[in-house]
Image (cartoon, rainbow, N blue to C red; front, side, top):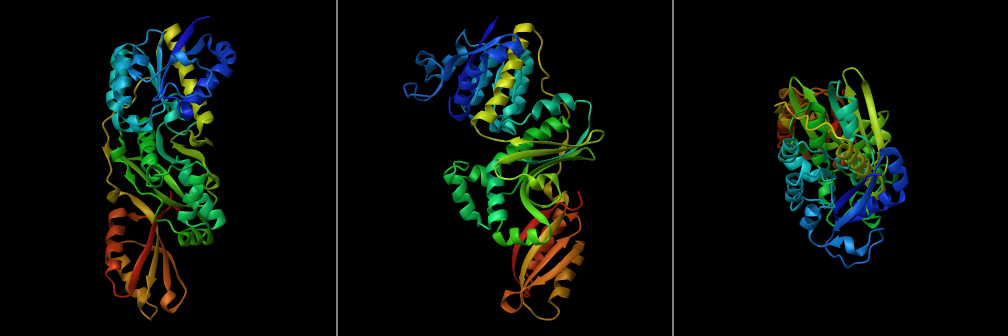
Length: 427
């Protein structure tokens, strides 16, 4: 049986899990794929450090280019993360006629065009199932199973760290700071959590999903982004009372030939399937013209779940290498406009701290009316110095809502606009 050599660029949490899985499941892979996969070389920062992986010490090197250039390596598996030197190494692999499997969402979301053009130019595979959703089969179903479908919208919880934080805030009443500290203690959040809590990670994944769903080039910079640091325990409590759950959503929509891609906290109705996604789990909700509503759910991070997606890609790429053929290449052939966030239409939740006196509500409602933002519901919480007004709007243009908020902040009767969140009632 043919053995295909795999070169690992990186042997951290995911890389080590891939090495262990290839070893432990070697016979199962051989039976299903008709070939064997073997780790031929591994690039790491410190080759001498002991590692719990079934790979001989002689196969480790500190030079990643040595892995790419090694004749024993037929498939390059990039698990380093970041843009550089990952980008140059992937391009070098293509120059040497070697297909690539990667889990690098940041690289794909920012340099996908260059990489896919290089792969297509050489007739090589570039697989990346693990880049979005960890172990959840998502990329290939979108590219393959739904190739004949027209996807209208993708809504996803694609960052487990933020979902864990919001779950703890919702279910246990923790503040954002306390929930973040717990996520860090449990190893879900980094010491610098900005990539997660500021929405950068989710925005990169949103760009990848939008590119595949709508067959167009969408980069991370095209995705409007808000994080969860401004979500307060007060917002969570109000959402619960109103029958909502707050989630950080990645949303990609195609309407009138334009793509709207955004990441932001959203108040979801408690009955929505995504509202039940708890802790560090991920889920992606796909709405198609003919297939209707589909949901993909599972562990969106972690070494072992992500490794299953990587190994699945390695098997597919190796089969093409051995038996001929090639998987579906880049499908982002269309030029579509990216819709500015100001032109989106959404519902909104606003929490205002106000002066408690007659005529305040009428004065505030007049501001909404001047900007053509229709109020769906309103109520007052507290009295005197603690008076608050909570509004839920009907769908309105984002630009109009921003103008409304700006004018509200200038009113003498409004002491503070404490929160503004989007609401998903009318999707």
